Every structure is written in structure tokens, then in C-alpha cells.
Amino acid sequence: MRKVDFSKIDISGYAFLIELKYLLSKEGASLKEIPILLKNRRGGESKISNHIISEGVFAPWKMIFKKINRSCPVCEKKTAVFFTKKNSFNFFRCNDCGLIFISPVPDNNLKIYSSDYFSGAKNGFGYVDYETDKRAMSSSLNSYLDKIEKILPKKGNLLDVGTATGFFMEIADKRGWKTKGVEFSEYAAQKARDKKLDVRTGTLENAGLEENSFNLVTLWDVVEHLSNPKATLSSVYRVLKKDGLIAINTPDSGSFFARILNKRWHLIVPPEHLFLFSQKSLAKLLKEIGFETLLIGRIGKKFTMQYAVQILAGKKEKSALSRLAKILVNNRLGKMIIPFSLGDNFFLLARKN
Ligand SMILES: [Zn+2]
Image 1 (cartoon, rainbow, N blue to C red):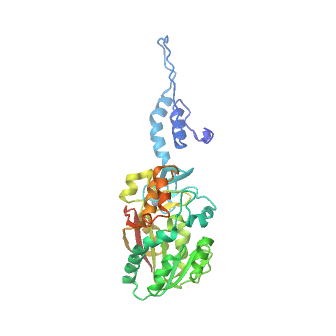
Image 2: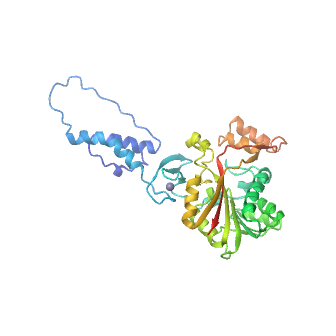
Image 3: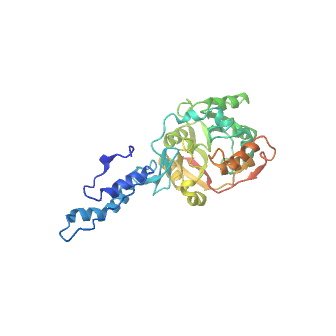
């Protein structure tokens, strides 16, 4: 009750109950009415005026209209409606482009990317064993590079944003790219530097990289974590050379699986994932910055058995699946690589014109 802003109720008649019920439901509470029957009431005139009756008739429609009240960060129009509440964070969904976004964006959410994030998954998110999970992804990463190299046969300077422990940089190095990386987590960045990789700690915006200096910028499983995707993607645009490419993979909020699961989609995990793009919304944002989208497609992902079980277990710490996930951590079966494609991720390639 305390969370409800009563000053927002603007219905003056009896229909204020409809509005109060609606406001409470948005906070996850419900209101029950207990009817009082006046048995001995005889004839007479109703004191309910026409004004009050019409307010009651129009109230539900007003509620529906009022729901559309958030500005979509991509469309920049009031096209977003409340979608769901998870771990006390509110998510909104744009009716136009399909973007699912957190609002307000939590500050200092980058704190979660400590060593725990890359090994241990103690808070119910992150990776139990990042190195093993990335090994499972190497076939996807190689197929991304196959597609990129068809368009960009001359291998030049590559910047990997959100490079983690440098797994992709090693793959790209082997294929002849000159790689640099930026990584927010000091723990992961140091791990990458231990492998003699050129990785700066911090965000792309404050990395101090030279303008027009890269042929390719990659963001693997990164944009969904950014607190301001537009700012970061604009920085990508600045550091890219003309005709340079940006390559992204990210969850697909418009995918069949995401739509079926709706609010229960396992990739809505705040404060880890803040922006869940559809193919349409990401292409729209990139176009606004100045990119031309060349291709969008789905590529099946591969994970370890352990990671797949952990996803299915979700956040329920004490469930049987969660216990199984823990057993699989140090188990050969758990390290087994399985194709685990739910088709709810997409790959996008765009060019700086
Ligand atoms: Zn939108």
C-alpha cells in the first residue's frame, strides 16, 4: 500500500476503486471489496449522478490508455508499457520496436562483474566456469568470423568490447587479426593480460581509444548488459574506420521462445541484463547512429551440459535441478558440450558508412 502514490488517482467518484485496484496491481498487490447489502432499503432516488456513472464506464479505458506512458529509449516515443517486475526491477516493453528495457536503469550495476561473476555464479547469475563455457562457444565464434571475413577479407584491427578473459581474442589472433580488448571487470581483464593479450580495464567510453582506428568491433553477449547502449554503440561508431564493421550477438526479445515464455523468459535477469533487443529494435538504433545493417540471423549456440542445467534450474537455489547443476561443475558429464539452441539469440552485422 505504501508504494502506491495516491495523489495519482484522479477519479473523484466511486470509480476511484477501479483506479486504486489498478495501481495496487502494478505493485503486485490485490484489493478485495466486501459488499454490504442494505436489505430494508425502499424506493427513492439514486444519489449517483450521471457524472459518476460515466466516470465508472470510462475508467477502464482510461487505465488502458494510461498504461502507455513510458518513452522507449530506441523509438524515443511514448510507446512502451509496463512488462514485468523481477528482483524488484521494473521492465517495460515497446509496442513498436519490441525492446524490453529496465527502468530506471540501476546505477553502479557494473559492481556485479567481480571474480564471482566469472567463476562461481554465487548470486544466481554469471558463469560457474567461464573458461569451460567459452570453450563450448568457440564453434559459434568461429562461424561469426566466417561470416565477417566474407565481407571483410582483409584482416585488420579488431576491438573486442566486453572481452572477458580474452577467449575470443585468442581465436581472432589465430586467424590473423590484430586484436585489442576492453573489459570492465578488473578480474577478467587481468586474466586476459596474463595471456599476453592487449586488454584495457574499463568501459569503451573511457578507454581512450583513437577515432577511426578499427576495421572490426565485436560485442559478444554484451549489449544486453550495457546501462546506455546508445552511448556505447555511438563510441563504437567513432572508433571504427569508414566501412568498418560492427558485429553483435545478443538475446532476441522477438524470438518465438521469448514470446512463448513472455515474462518467464530466462534471459530477463536484472541487474545483469538491462536491455533485451529484438532484431528490429537493434537495427533501428544502429541506423540512427549511422550504421547500415548488412545481415541479421540466428546462429545456434552451444553450451556445456552444466550451463544448460543451470539455466533450466533458474534462480531456485534449493531445487533438484540446481543441485544437479552444482554436482555437474566438477564432473566430466557437466563439461560435455551440447547444442542448446532455443533460437532466442541473434547475430547482427552492420557497416559504418
Ligand atoms: Zn521502441
